[in-house]
Amino acid sequence: MAISNSEIADLFDQLGDLLDIEGENPFRVQAYHRAARAIRSQPKSLADMVAAGEDLTRLPGIGEAIAKKIQTIVQTGKLPQLEQVLARTPRTLVDLMQIEGLGPKRVKTLFSLLDIKTLEDLERAARTGKIRQLPGFGPKTEALILKHLDRALVGEKRFLRFEAEGVAHALLEYLEDTPGVEQIVVAGSFRRWKETVGDLDILVTTGGQSPVMAHFVRYERIAEVISHGTTRSSVRLKNDMHVDLRVVAGESFGAALQYFTGSKAHNIEIRTLAVKQGLKINEYGVFRGDERLAGVTEEQVYGCLGLPYIVPELREGRGEVAAAMEGRLPDLVALEDIRGDLHCHTRATDGQDDMVTMARMARSLGYQYLGITDHSKRLTVARGLDEKRLREQMEQIDRLNESLEAIVLLKAIEVDILEDGSLDLPDTVLKELDFTVCSVHYKFNLSKKKQTERILRAMDNPYCTIIAHPTGRLINKRDPYPIDMERIMHAAKDGGCVLEINAQPERLDLNDAHCLLAREIGVKLAISTDAHSAEGLNLMRYGVAQARRGWLGAENIINTLNLDEFRAQIKRT
Image 1 (cartoon, rainbow, N blue to C red):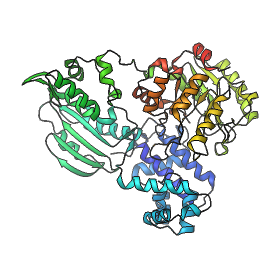
Image 2 (image 1 turned 90 degrees about the vertical axis):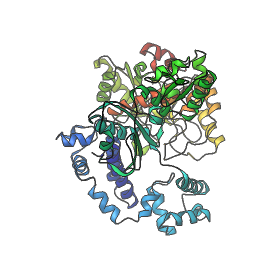
Image 3 (image 1 turned 45 degrees about the vertical axis):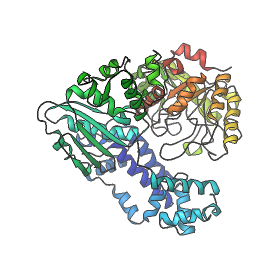
Image 4 (image 1 turned 180 degrees about the horizontal axis):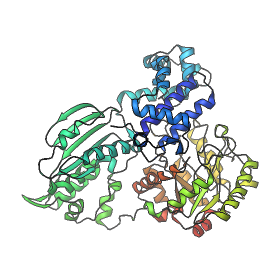
């Protein structure tokens, strides 16, 4: 089985981190991290492109040197430069890089000043208060380290939905070629579009005696076959993801799909409702006594209970069954409702493509408008724009809009919210923009009160339009910073500020619970990709899925409006 884009990107990120620890040229380090971002944003399999002899340098962000390294990875499964660095790097340093709050420089400090060689050494140093005494650390970083170590001992490994998608699609493609396979679907949390996935549950129907089970356990990426039967097999893949394959009868496929999609809370409500109606419901069908009433499709299963079809994203036991019974299920936002993307970056700062390339991709997606939101000056690592460069970009956008067809570029910026709540650029230039996207990019460790007040003060500025990735989390890497989200949402509603659902797979911020809260409060939201390349604009589907999990309709999302309506609503002054 070919290596996935995500796995290739991980190798480049790891190489960049380890070279950073060694004090390598920062431009070289950043080149590897930029390559990793570019690779993750590619919708097409790089392994397939290599096999077909395609020119990888035609892809945004992939130069000749990186292309050669990708070819080597695809052909051998390894990156020789990384192997060389790993050979001279203590294993503990690699493990430490996975801990929230520890970047390469802090890892090097721990290793050199405290002689930490194992995770046990790290835990002992943290529990005895030695880490807080190091320059640049402190009690909060020490607490984060202990929290990570405790979580690592008890928690199951969970994968970003984006990572699981690559694994699932490759598996489905492999299994679909098996003789006799008729229907095949990935169920479970994957089908409910949860932001992380622990394992994959695959259901298949077959015609006649299909060798699908034997074919499944021969899959190239399997590390261990846990069980192998005629109707169910379970394996562990080389990336540690567990996969179950079940063969079900066609007459039970809908019932099995409903059952194994879950969630547990949703299924308990469904079974309870069935019992009240004198029915029994399980993975084989809906029964009254020995009589099968339904099972072929999910619509039949829900229909037997007097319910309309409930989409998988809502099946979390959050009142969706009662809403279905009362005819109150929301009309959920869909990808085709999106009229524009309000958060993206170009090569003017840390993006990979120019504005024309971004505009053409947005137009190909059917968008009417695209907000150009490069970083502001405080983010020096991204070569953020000062007032002079921003004004030059604004003039460039005006010129481009005269020649672009069927797409309008909007003048905007992702402006940093400083520690005191002020914005990184003066109002004299911000007021000339179509809108602003305002973000917290540093000082994540403020208290809940201070962080909340920081964002509230930013929202007091009439030129603060959208609050981007409002909790600052990176899934599986960095916890949200503490804020009073309900207070922020009420302030946003009262002041006409918009909150973002960031569609980056490692952010998905706001989360689904916050989307529900926003719906209840009535605050307007924007779904944006935060794309750093033209291909990154395709990530919108993750943000839409998050909004759907939060019961949101098109009326809740400001960038479902056409251009004129959007312009009328986005300005706060």
